[in-house]
Every structure is written in structure tokens, then in C-alpha cells.
Length: 216
Ligand SMILES: Nc1ncnc2c1ncn2[C@@H]1O[C@H](COP(=O)(O)OP(=O)(O)OP(=O)(O)O)[C@@H](O)[C@H]1O
Ligand SMILES: [Mg+2]
Image 1 (cartoon, rainbow, N blue to C red):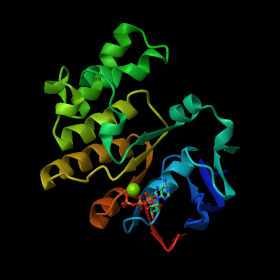
Image 2 (image 1 turned 180 degrees about the horizontal axis):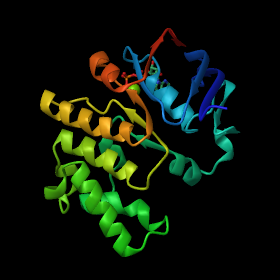
Image 3 (image 1 turned 90 degrees about the horizontal axis):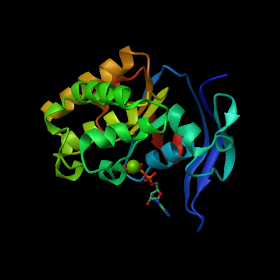
């Protein structure tokens, strides 16, 4: 049994537009994958299917041997962390520290443990100077890093990162690459959706390409 399994998954929008057709995919827990494909090829749709945020029109998506829909949203979130294509869509807190610490409060962390974990994440993602900053006031690179920090804080098994390098200059890209190398070294697997083949390949055990609704 693989950690994530897609069995003959197809997806059409309600009006019938086909996005994905007969996708078979097995992902191991500690595997790192790069997913590339043209705009509109269905990369985000595939991510949302894996997360159980969309239901396949045909086929099924399994997470640790159970249909992903059988888990509560919270249980899924503990397993697979999702960094949205537009990180602003996931921000809600007044400052970066709260953005990172929020999820921990509901996971049984004590206030002291939260403080330690938030500090650890701020350091790892080079955001120490922005602990008190309103997330929307951060630069694009800082927003991407904060979104990843917030998703990683509670320690999910696996990450789905939807185009995390969009809008980053080469230096920020390189920094994020270094951070993802560390994530990989810690044994946390990820699916990295990314237009930059070179960036993706450098970090991934395997590359997937979506074309015409299929993985090629
Ligand atoms: N809510 C929706 N209703 C109908 N069609 C949609 C909806 N959301 C997306 N689509 C269409 O589904 C297809 C796949 O979209 P998706 O967002 O998965 O592509 P993508 O590969 O992530 O693209 P990008 O590289 O631009 O992020 C596109 O043709 C898109 O226009
Ligand atoms: Mg997308």
C-alpha cells in the first residue's frame, strides 16, 4: 500500500469539461515529486482531488489505504499539508507568529510549546524579523515562506505545494529550494507543482507531467 493512491481517477466539471482522465498514481510517504504541465492542464485540480477537496467523477483516491473522503477535514489536514497557489488565500491572522501558531492551539500544544515551535518555524523560514508583521504586508517571497511555515508547523506527513516559486526572484527561489531540501532531508515527502522544470527536478525523486488530462 502506498501513502497516496489514485486509481483510474477522472474529473469533469459539472458542465462536462474534462480535466483529468484515467489517472493512476502511487506516492510513497517520503517521496518527493515535481508536477509540471501547461496552464490549465489540471495540476491544481489534481492536488484538490488528493486532498479530498474535490470528488473524482470516476475512480478513487486513497490516503493510507482508506478513501480520502472517509477522513474528517481535520484528520486529512494532519496528514497532508496544502500550501495554496495564492498564499494570501490561506492567511487570516493579524501577524506572522499567530499565523504559524494558530493550528497548534487545537493540537494540544501548551502555550510554551507553541512559542517554541513558532520561533523554530520563524527561524527555519527566515522570518524572525516579521513575527509581528501583518501577513498581507509581507513581500511575495515572505508570503510564500509564511504559508509554508504555517502548514508545516503542526508536522504533517506530506506536503502539497502549489507553485510556491511563482513571483520569486532567483535569490528567493534559491532560498526556498534550500528550505525544501531540508524538508526532504527530514523525510517529509512532497508534491511540488511547478512550472520551472529545473527547480522541480533538483528537488524531486520523480517528475510527473500532465498533458491532455493524463500523466505522461
Ligand atoms: N470552478 C471551475 N469550474 C469550471 N472549470 C474550472 C474551474 N476551476 C478550474 N477550471 C478549469 O479546469 C481546468 C484545470 O484547471 P487547474 O486550475 O487545475 O489547472 P492548473 O494546471 O493548475 O493551471 P495553472 O498552471 O494556471 O495553475 C482549466 O481549464 C480551468 O479553466
Ligand atoms: Mg494551478
